[in-house]
Amino acid sequence: EDLIEAGAEVAATRAPEMRPQEIAATAWALAAKRASGRWAERAVVACAEQAVQAGRSGRPAARQLVGSAWALAPVGHGGRPSARQLWSDLGATALRQLSGLHPREVANLSWAFATVQHRETPGLVPCIAGAVLRRLAEFGSLEAPAVAWALAPARHREVSWERGLACFALRPAREQPLRGLAALSWSWATLLGEADLLTRAVLPAARARVATLAARGPGELSPEATTREIVDPLLQLTWALSLLALRDRALLMDAEAVLRGVGRARDSRAGDRVGALFPTIGGLADKSANVQDGPLLVREVGGVAFVYKPPDWEVDGGRDADSPARPPRLGVQRLSADFLQKMYPDRPILRDVSANRGILGRLDTPSSGLVLCALGHEAYLVMRLRQETHAVEREYIALCHGKVPRGIRRVAVPVRTAPDATSKAVEDGLPAVTRFAPCAWLQRADDASWPPRVYSLVVVSILTGRKHQIRCHLAHVGHPVVRDQRYAPEHFHADGRWCPRHFLHRFRLAVLKRGQQGGIGDGPDSACEQSAEQKTAESVAATVPLPPDLRAVLATLQPLGSFTDGAAAEAVAGPAAPDGASALLAWGGSRPPGLGDWALRGDRAGGPGGSGDGTPEA
Image (cartoon, rainbow, N blue to C red; front, side, top):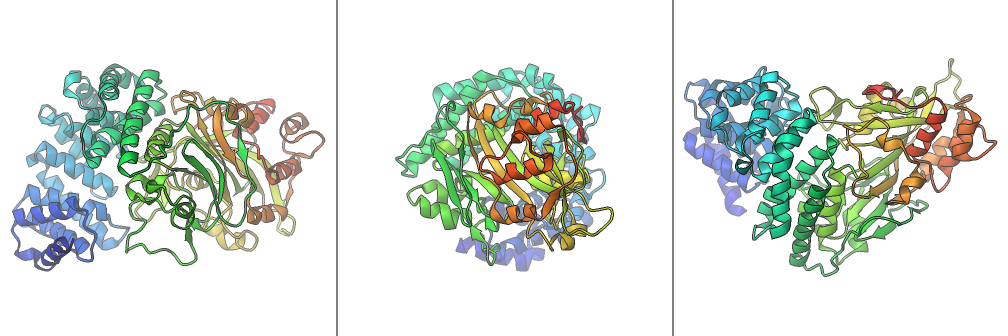
C-alpha cells in the first residue's frame, strides 16, 4: 500500500512528463489495486486529464484513454462541476477514437461511462452501439454482453441494436460462458424486451451451464474469481428471468445448490462452524414484536436475523462503510458495528465488507423498520438469490401529502440515481415497480387553513429496491412523503412543525417459498391476491408496528370523512368502527394489515386494476 501511494504521488505531480503507455499502466495499477489513499484520486484525475490533452493535440492513445476512464470510474464525480466536465471531455475524446478501439477496449470504456451514469456527451451511446454493430463478428462472448450491460440503463432501444443483441444471443450455445449469458439476460430484462428471446436463446444454454456447476461444484477458484465468474452471473441471470416472469424450477434449484456450496466453502474458510442453513420455508408462523428506542432482534431463523432498525441508525453495509473519506456521522449509530457485531461476536460475516456485513438490502437512516441480516455466507447467498428472484416481500407504511384515490395503485416508471444520491423517475433508468393503497384520509386537528390540507396513510409494497424508490415514486405521482426534504422541499419546514422525520416505516418482511415470487411480467394483482395472514402460512415473516414518534404524529391527525363501505372496513379492522379511525387503530396494534389485506378491501370496493403511472389498477 505504501508503494502504491508513493507511485500515485509521483503520477499526480508529474503526469505531464509521462508517456502515454506509462499513464495507461499507472491508471490500470491504481484501479486494479483499488487504491483509495490521499494521492490515488489525484493521480487518476491527472491521468485522465492527460488522456484528454493527448486527444485534443491529435495524438490519440487508445490504451491511455481507456485505462484512464476505467480507473476514474470508481471515483465517480459526486456531482462536482469540474469532474463532470472531465467526463464530458473524456466522452468527446472517445467519440473521436471509437472506430480504432479493440472490442475489449470498447467494452471497458462502455463500463466506465455506465458506472458514472454519464449522459452529457451527445450521441455517445448510439455511437458505441453503432461501433459494436458494425464489427459484431469481432466481439467475443464476453465483450458484446459487457457493452449491452453498460448501455441497458440508458434505455437504448434502437431496432437495429435490439436485433443485433438477438443475433448475438442466438450464437451456438458452446460459445457463450455463464458471464456472457447473464449480462445479456440482465440487459434484455432491463430494456423490458420480449421474454421470447431469453426463452429461445439464453435459457437452454444457461440451464446447461448451471446444471454442470451444480453437478461438479465451483472448482478451485479464488474468492474474487468465484464472485466474478459464478456468484454475480447467477444472481444477474435469475433476476432477469424473474423480472420477466420466466419460471424455471430446475434452474433455480441448481442455482441455489451452487450458491449453497460457495457459501459453505466461505464459512469454512472464515472458521464459522455453525453452518447456518436457511431451511426449506413452510409452516413457520409470523413473528411480531413491539418496538423500542434501540435496535431489536425480532426473530432469528435458519441463520437469518430479522432486526428492527430505529430511526437515525445507519445500515452500515457496503464497501465504503469504513472509508476514511466517510467517517461516522455525529449522533448516528451503526446497525452492524454498534449492535449486530456485539450481539453475535462469533460471526465472521458481520465484519466482512465484501459480503455487505451480512446485511441484505438497505433502509434510509431517518427511516425505521425491519432489516434482514444473514449470519453466515451460505445463508447470505441463499437470501441474495431470494432477493434477486423477488421472493422477499417488503411492505411499508407512509404518510403522504394529498388525497390518494381509493384502490391499489401501481407505479412502474424506471428510476435513475444521480451522483448526488437523488433518485429520479425517468425513462432512462432501471426497472422499478411500486404498489400502494390508501388506508385512511386524514387532516390535522389544528389546521385552520381552508380548504384543510389532506394527508393519506398508505401501505406500500415494492417489487424492486432502487435507492429511495418509494419516496421518488410517491413524489412522482404527486403524493410526496411527509417531511421529506429531498423529494418535497416545499413542504419540509411546514411539516417539521408536527412531524420529526420523514414518515416512512418498513413494518413487514417476508421470505416466500421458492416459486411464490412475482415479476413485472405477471398480472398487476399477482402480489396482492392473498392477505398477509394467508401468505404467512407459507413464508418466514416478521412485523413491527409503528414506533412511538410516528404514533405520536398520527395522534395529531383525525379521519377525514368516509373512506369506503362498512363491509370492507369490517374485513380489516372489525365491526362498527368508522373507517379512518379503524385504520389508525390498526396501525397502533401489534399486527398491522399488509397490502394484501387492503387489496381484499379494494376488491369489495370496486376492484383494483393497473397502469404504470400511479393510476388505479382497474
